[in-house]
Image 1: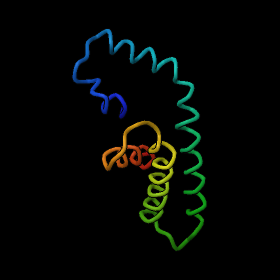
Image 2: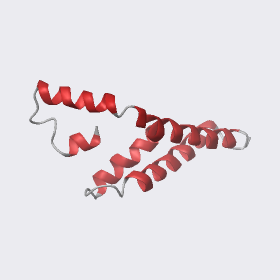
Image 3: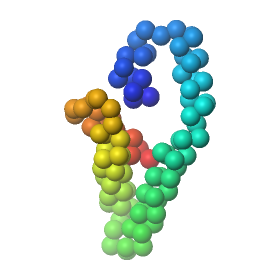
Image 4: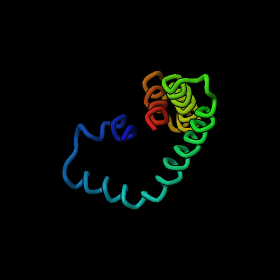
Length: 99
């Protein structure tokens, strides 16, 4: 939803435009597998590797994986499009951190 928010989509909208949004969402849903599930599984494998290190507690492990996800998402998605700046850096990074 970040591009729709940044473009001002939700300020001047009606039912027809929301309908178009959901149609596009349904047509591009198969790409969510590539851009959501696979990176989440990759980070889960890093978490599993860190789980086997006995000296790392779960909060530290959570932060390590979260920071790695933040950096990966920022590097992959942050350079796309015309937007730049601190807000876009944080929004694109949070995409990875939340997973």
